[in-house]
Every structure is written in structure tokens, then in C-alpha cells.
Amino acid sequence: MDYKQYIRVIPDFPQPGISFKDITTLLNRGDIYRQAIDELRVMVSDLKIDLIAGPEARGFVIGAPLAYALGVGFVPIRKSGKLPGETVEAGYDLEYGSDKLAMHNDAVKPGQNVLIADDLLATGGTISTSVNLVRQLGGNVAGAAFLIELAELNGRAKLPDVNVFSLMTY
Image 1 (cartoon, rainbow, N blue to C red):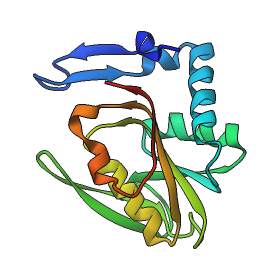
Image 2: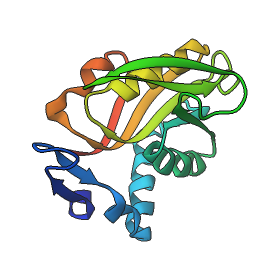
Image 3: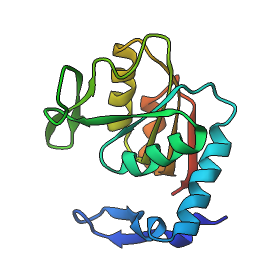
Image 4: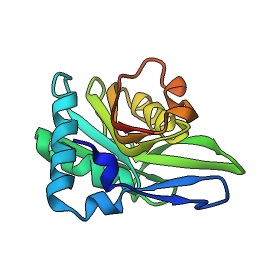
């Protein structure tokens, strides 16, 4: 299916020169959302996956239903300071500044195979940081799955040893 017809493209958002890919127009079509999750499930079905981890917030709306479809658990990756209890953190650079992501320190057991799921692969900063967190906890990164990949931003380059699965490429 051509899922791009369900993605709203908003020019010059959030700043001039950016062409924002809005997935809410796919998400609000239950039949299309279900089909997209099912297609991602098929794409990763040959991997050994114990858990899916998704960075907030859109990684939750892709990762949680994908975990459900695969019959595995889901682990949220949040901004620093948003999770109760003990966490591990990893920092990453933004265009102007830096940020940190966190996971509970007991979210991934050593040796577990984790698929990272998010809505979009752009520059790879968030996902490479998510990979780092999973590995800090002793997990194996089975792959990374996305609705959308922005190929021109070359996010795959930050994931040299990660299998990347994308439903759509711009």
C-alpha cells in the first residue's frame, strides 16, 4: 500500500525549510493505522524480539501496538527526569544544544533482544541514543522499525550495525 497518501506534509514547519511529515492523518484512520502496524510486524517477524522500546512520544504510538501485535512487552524511552525510579541516561546533540533520554534500569534484562520502534528516522540522533540505552542495560538491539525514513538526512549512518526497517521513504 502507498501509505504516503495518508501522511500530511506541512511545509516550513517547525521552521523554514523543513517539510514536516505529519502521521496523525494516518493514525486517525483506524483501518490504515492497523494495516501499517501489521505490515511493520511482517517486516520484523523473522527477528528474535523479546521487547520493543519506543522513544516518546510518537515511538509509543508505533512501538506499543507493534509490541501487542508481536506478543512482546513494550518499554518506554523518555526524556530525562520523566520516569520514576532508578534510570540510565544517555545524551545526544540537537541542532542547538543537547538533550538526554532515559530508561528504567531494570527495563531490559541482559541478553534480551530489543527492537526499537519510532515514527520517523531522520538524522538518527534519537535512535542511536536509544540503541545506546538498550546496550547500557545489556540488551541486544535486534533492529529498528519506522513508519517513515527521511533518506536524505542519512540517519542510517548513525546505526551502522542495526537492521533498519522502514514502511515509507522520503
